[in-house]
Length: 194
Image 1 (cartoon, one colour):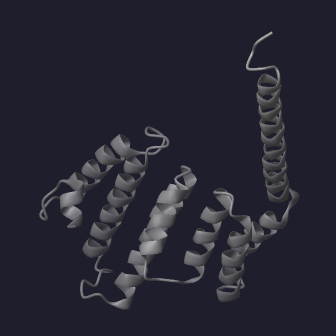
Image 2 (cartoon, rainbow, N blue to C red):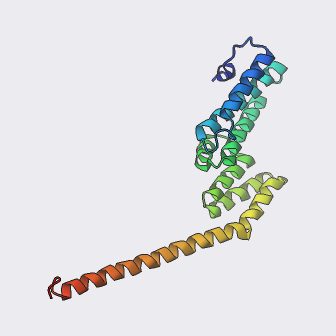
Image 3 (cartoon, rainbow, N blue to C red):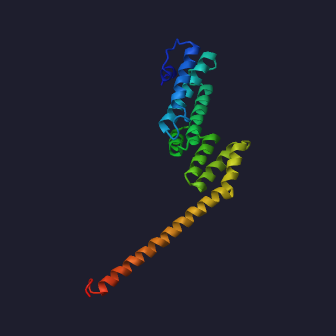
């Protein structure tokens, strides 16, 4: 979509008008105003991307013919949108966006791993974070998160989750045994006579 249309301004709008339109929309859709609202987060990402794109076009750094520069910035804008989804806890939405991307660079693997970790799929997350580190071994953010995954913090959550499922399973079987026992007592007592 046209970045001018997203901001609701014409192509010949002044820089001040564009900034004013951006600020008005940013106030309306900002995540602090709309916590846990995936539509607002998506809209905010669109507004940020549109504003950045207009600034690039006006500064002369924008090349409209699908050059590497444009595609690379577009991917960075997509990644910043995905980071915003992650920041507000919309991990499934972020995974959906990542899945539809063609780019599979280190940041893609990192963000996908972060999402997986936050929905409880820590083992799979480790695989993706490890791949991100292989692709960009100098990125300290990736290494820190990988170390965090290996920390007690995530491990405890998995053990508690497993322990909780185990207890629930045992309680379920005790309940079934109790119901069966009541049923046999009822049958043996002559269907309630007596």
